[in-house]
Amino acid sequence: MLNLDNVQKALLKELTGVADFLKGAFNVRANGASALRQSTDSIRIVPKKDCEGFDIFIAPETEGERVHIPVVMTKSGMKETVYNDFHIGEGADIAIVAGCGIHNCGGDDSQHDGVHRFWIGKDAKVKYVEKHVGAGDGKGRRILNPVTEVHQEEGSVLEMEMTQIRGVDDTTRTTTADLAAGARLVVRERLLTGGKERALSAYTVNLDGKGASADIVSRGVAQGESFQRLDVRIVGNAPCTGHTECDSIIMDKGRIVAVPALEANDTDAALVHEAAIGKIAGDQLVKLMTLGLTEQEAETEIINGFLK
Image (tube, rainbow, N blue to C red; front, side):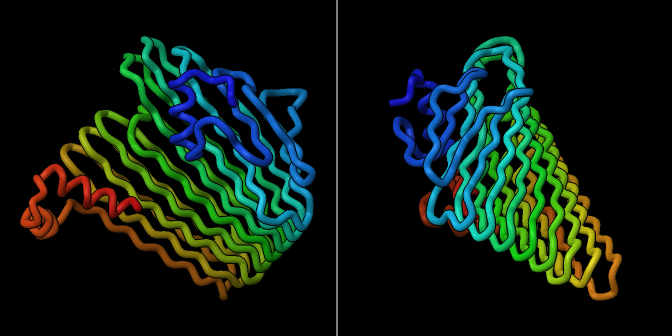
C-alpha cells in the first residue's frame, strides 16, 4: 500500500491505472520526494547523487517487464526539476509508464519539469507512455515542462504515447532524437486544451543511419481561448523515411499553429508532412443528435473518438 492520501491516489490511478499497488520496478514521487521505490533483478532504479532523479538500468534481453515512474504534486507553490536517465540494454523489450499529475487548490503556481533521457541499445524495443493531468480549483497555475532526449542504436524501436487532456495551464514539451541505422521512432501525441491553457510542443528528429525511420502524428483539440503550437522538424542525413502529421480541431476562440519542417541531406531521404486544422463538421453533429444526443454530448463523442 502506498503512503499517499486520497487525492494523490486518484492522480496516481489516472496516470497509471493503478491506485494502491504497483508490480515490478517502480518509483512513485510525491510532493518532491520518493514515496516508494522498488527494483527487480533485471531493472535497477538508482538515485542520482548530484541532482534530483534516477538512473534506471535495464539489463540486456529483459523481456515483458514494466517500469512505473509517476509523479504526483498536491502542494501549491511547489517547483521542481527532476532528471531520469534510462539505460536500455541490447535486445530488451520493455514498457515504461511515466507522467505527472498536479492538483493545485492554492494561490501559488505549481510546476514540474521532468527531463527524461533514453539510451536505447541495439535491437531493443521500448514502449513509452507519458500522461500529464491537472486538477484543483485554486488560482495557482499548473505548469508542466517535459523534456525528452532520445538516442537510439542500430535496429532499436521506440514507441511513444504522449497524452495531455485539459487541466494543465501551461506546458512546453520538447523532444529530440537521433537514430542510427535501422532504428525506428513512432510518436502518437494527443492534446486537449481549454480555457486559457497554452501547450507548445516541439520535435527535432535526426535520421542519421541507413534505413532509419520516424512517424510522428499529433492530434489536438483547442477549446475556449486556449492556444496550441506544434513544431516538428525531421532531418534526413542518410537513406531513410520520415513522416509527420498534424490533425487539429479548433473550437470557440481557440488558436492552433502547426509548423512542420523537413530537411533532406541525402538524395535517398524520403520525407513527408501533412497538416490539417478545422472545426467539427456539422453533418457529424447532426448524425449523432438524431440518435438522441445533445449537441454538447455529440461534440464530446466526436472529440473522444478523434483523440482515441
